[in-house]
Length: 408
Image (cartoon, rainbow, N blue to C red; front, side):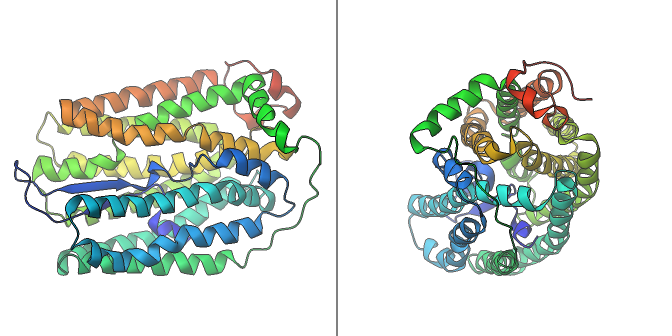
């Protein structure tokens, strides 16, 4: 809950002072935390390791500490970065975020498998919804505090105070995580030989057509999210808004997300998380359409609506993305399915912001919003028409599924 005060999927704007840009704008860097979060290439090997362990808790605790270490460094690094050349400062900051994101990716599989063991499928939506809702409520207060700190203190002290507050929250969450008790489960020996694991991965991808199509739809959906980390920057440039407006946008994002978690959790438990994923994509498409409209019409109020829609859709997307990946495949192979779902879609999350930046630089924000919308609608269409909800499929029939059909 406290860890979600600085949610992995939230954009973290980082500003490094320097000479003004020739166009009159300062050099600004948007670090999108979801760039590498929960996506690490080591997941392929780690999934097999997780399957062979009767308890996942030791891995979660050890890797969780590594994941949180950057938050201890950031409050002090801000002062040091201020004296470095611009390129060096940006490089170090991105490296630090990559450390956090990569460790988040590695810990994702044992954490999700531990949650899947503790929380039954009929209650996972509400579990994620309540935990994220609680974090979002605290996050609203945190966003207000961040806005005050950014507005009333000069750089770099304002960012150091913000990062310090984040460090306190994530390490307090670690204390509560350490209190979790996970029952041990007997691990079946078959299929866990190290030399056979790679063949088993290929077999799953070849035989489970429903899962394979789901991965392709997620690729398009993640590419459709390319605009997420650039909307606040676009608003500041387009309408010459003060930097403190970022705190307002963040507050709206968290508040809308809190409402989203309150609704999406019970809905996903009752109807299936595929429906939640579809509705979330539809709301994100509406947000992109609104953002595109602000590029042609003088409607700054539309940007506030964009962040409302973004907050609600992001809540449903995160909740359904976590829950739905746990429902593919047999229970004994669940870590492998989770690992494949996280790893194979990782490149899309890496490519999306780079592609968005290139499109912005070459053609402008309007074209970028249009491309993002096209990807979003393509992913939504594939999910709706070609993917069946794994919860409503018989486990024994999954391997023979062909793409197509809708969940009941």
